[in-house]
Image (tube, rainbow, N blue to C red):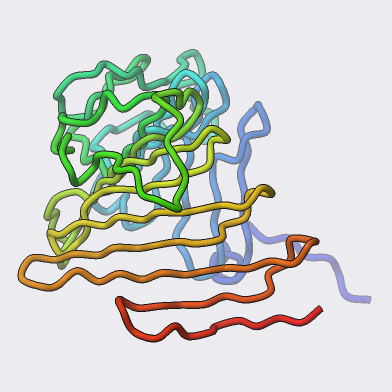
Length: 271
């Protein structure tokens, strides 16, 4: 009979092939190592939300990835910072702190938010989400003009006033070219009276604009989607997808049209 052997976690075989997880006293995973990868550290706040994570490449650069929620637990800020929290097997540096981002409606490096419970060192914001209102327009590099403004379009629903409580109203994402920051991609989202996104307006990576219009049936399935793409020095490109359904709301047909060219049937289902 072969004797049972035990190995230290540092054993080369385990380091190469094992899935290794460590947990803190609250049974939260604070350390994860997958085969062929360096370990990933996670730090939680007092509300059990992962605020900091760090992989092997980030450790080489003394960086941490941050993910900050608002008061409702919705992640509104994420990016990279130079904080050096006291991470360790028994260390829980944010255990007594509830970290959150509060909308301040101002121009600042955190794109309109202020932090409670923590201070970020040299933060680089990678993504931002806005909720509940459109106060973010006209600030922090997001224009309040035709690029982001709602424009009622026949056949694509109608905006339900400014009532958007609980809904995501804006998105901001950092843009990089050859690992160099080159600005942000932004968009504003508009809803109908059933809180379905009927318009998404913003810019694109070619310094042009993107507009997406969506119509729905009673069941909430999209029946038509129009995507208008523009770039400097080029004619706008319009794509239209049309969807039809049977009485059970199963997709029957999907038709695609580019600009004014003939339509193409992409899907034709029979049930």
